[in-house]
Length: 122
Image 1 (tube, rainbow, N blue to C red):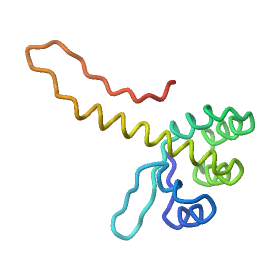
Image 2 (image 1 turned 45 degrees about the vertical axis):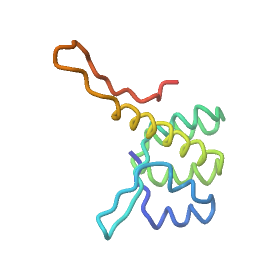
Image 3 (image 1 turned 90 degrees about the horizontal axis):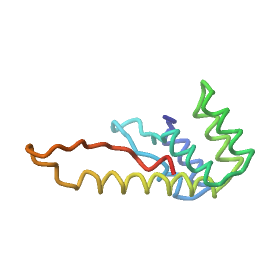
């Protein structure tokens, strides 16, 4: 998980627009706010773009002890297209979860196994 603080989001929003606020879930305790961006969403977006430099940067992000800093560097280097892809991945997965949880649960007498696999392995 990558944590992007509200202050960082404000700076990124000035540069890339409002999509930066749609790359992950918003969390706040009333004082401190941040966006939690799953690395899996970043990975899926990078693979969709297919830029070798971006894929190399992704590898570095996964190994980094300071994912936040690396992530912001990646956004700055690969620009709005990367931001848009991450936001699109987040929307796709959020929509999938809403559809999944709006399904009725199976009756007790039915033999069924529910799995929650997000569509990340496309």
